[in-house]
Image 1 (cartoon, one colour):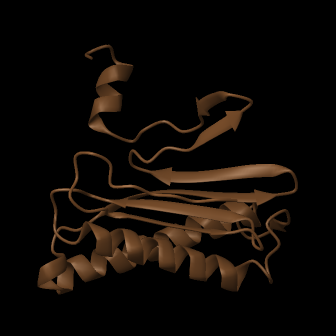
Image 2: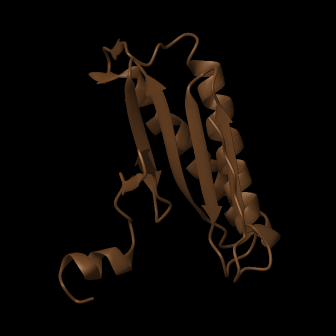
Length: 154
């Protein structure tokens, strides 16, 4: 596994945060919302909290096992839970810390287990598969633009 992020040619600073953990089989990328306060804070918090939560939970909750209470595989439950925890923390910071007012982030997170890949994402950060020389997008943007494309307005 490898990760790389770049601010590109337009932005002055990078609001991306990314981590990978081959031992636990996950990769997480968050992109702070540009034009708002503290996008890099939101993305950093999100990546750190989700990664920390997965590292703590995965040893006791193998991703391929069924969680009886929810009826979902642990992988689904864990990713959903950790993203919700990170979301609550970002929201709380945005409400209580003036320099963080309005901050937000996208996230795309993957968990590899049992020869499978689980993807969880929010916003317009995408996950692609590279097979041979072909990239295929595996996610669909959560955005107004995507909704307009879907109904033929764009």
